Length: 119
Length: 320
View 1 (cartoon, one colour):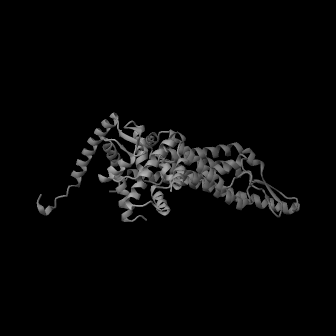
View 2 (cartoon, each protein chain N blue to C red):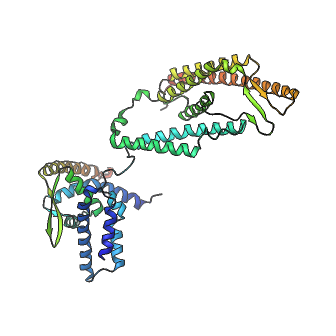
View 3 (cartoon, rainbow over the protein chains, first blue to last red):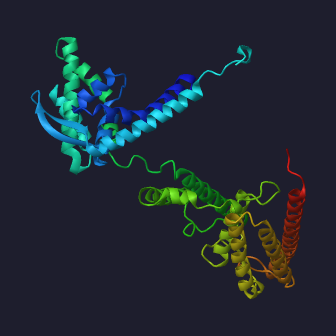
């Protein structure tokens, strides 16, 4: 039977899943290759493991939201990703959704005033 | 060090689609090397084989790493899973009912012909595989959302009242299927008693009633099938069940008039012993058919009671 920690971990992962795409698209407004993208996200507080990141990058590229090219850097071939024009439009719409959802959830999560306070 | 990395990446490559293999591996190699170099910078020395092995284990099992790049991530997805599960439950219930009947008959009348009836494990395994394959195809090429929308609230069974349960219906359908298969000669049961050499064949009266009995069995399957698919039509289902049971009672009532139901023969028994045996068998069948008539009538009465209860509950006020 799952304990409280397992349940919390599952819910935390579910909560993060949707926002990871937003974070990746947002980070790729500037060009990155996989490793630096992952580092940049981690530095910003969004940890993502490579097992999830690389398939996601390919899926987003197949959907036309990202563009990529191979270039040599630091003596190795690296694949650089950046947001495509279509990706920019989708990101703007997603940010709108995110902001609206955040405001709605924040309003719901506001502390409920107690009866004693008279409010 | 590089040998272990090459072997690791080759293991991932083997599981990737050929068209994307080189591209994905090149990218993963870069990620892996960048990560290992960063770790070596942190340590200030080259990594040991044990440390490298641990880093590769952290990177992930090759099957899992490669699997994440695959378009299909599951065989039966969450949208189609409830339908798959329902199909599996129905199939297992019917199969179990069929084999329970076969086992009971095998105990009563002797071992069933092994060539005619495959092993239950084989049948269940085959049914499970076939259903899973069909649903996996529906998951991949079909439209699970459309499947989920294909239901109508008005077809749901009534919330109150004792209609026949889905399990009861399925068990009955399984039993009828066995009887039908035996009646039409698809499966055979041994009719020679081991040891005595006593052979029991059906008397000519059954041949006279072959088509009515066959029609009755098909009718019974259809009535149960309708009750399964359209449980909301309580009146129609109840009426059909009453009609079916009374038809069954009428058929066996007419068969019972014959008084002679089986032909008993044996090369080892004397004519007198055989005659006594014949009389005993016919008496036993006569009694058994009488019980069958009573059961048919009782089932019809139960259906009438169920309909009465349905009317009573429908007109009674709902619980708070």
